[in-house]
Amino acid sequence: MKKLSELFDLRYGHSLELNRMKLSDSQNGIAFVSRKNRNNGVSAYVEPVEGLAPAAPGELTVALGGQGGALSTFLQERPFYTGRDVEVLTSRELLSKAALLFYCACIKENRYRYGFGRQANRTLKDIIVPGPNELPVWVEGTLAAIDLAGCDAPSVSAPTPPLNQDTWKSFRLSAIFEIKKGKRLTKANMASGLTPFVSSSDANNGVSGYVGQHPIHPGDTIA
Image (cartoon, rainbow, N blue to C red; front, side, top):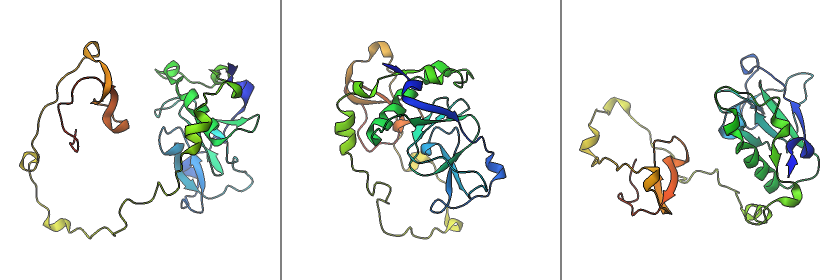
């Protein structure tokens, strides 16, 4: 096991303010990485700043704090600027994309240490992670084989039909859905299994785990 600082060179980001920058489009602009925990940390795309070089593709960005959640970590694959409280990590040796993504996950797993407003600016370098020779075999196997080409393409190629909001009317959900209450299941009663357990989580499609109980709702159901 290694300290993060033994595998990566850590430096503070550009610390720019988005509201002082000129916005651009995603095709021609430079990614602006903030402390967001989604969308690869990218808040917007901006015009180049005169005299300020963007960070290079292939580096990791780590949120040191903020409402998005400390230690939100992403691999940046195009030149980028950063906002406040974002650390940039450069690998000290050549690592594959799969390995870099694995280290993103390793860093994120330490976010429980930084709740209640605690910042990671002083202790990020001391986080313990596996060394390159200690990576699980599946990192360079399963992950490396995943082909994501075209995954961002629309699922339907037909254009969206025009919507006339003037003809819209109010309706009750009960008029078009059969509404049923869920059944409470405590952790003490959960068994390990393959049935999705949907909670009030706002992530992962609401699925917070998998249990051994028989499902009580069919698929294609809104929860």
